[in-house]
Length: 100
Image (cartoon, rainbow, N blue to C red; front, side, top):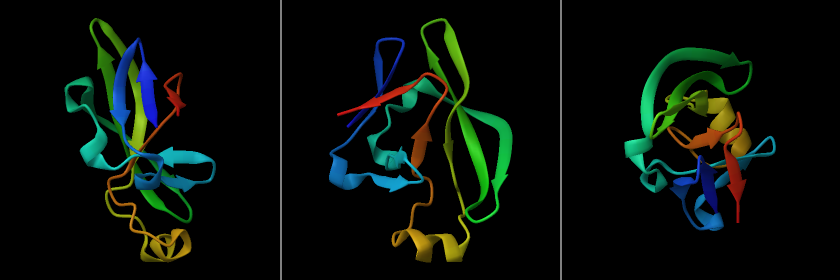
């Protein structure tokens, strides 16, 4: 699976290494091409997963604000519900395409 934006591969991993939650693929941190990510100060809260943090995706001269999100410390009940610890796994949106 790949996360692609602005003709660059932001993340790539075999599907079996990803976690699917609520229709979104979450990539393990080791699969990210970190040169394309900048920490954002944006946060949101999911009632059952906890507080999400965000990355901006930056490719050449374009920035996709809040294009990737992750849960640094998901609620223990969320980990139980998902069946796997998804701490720091990264999901994408806002025009970032996830494909096989």
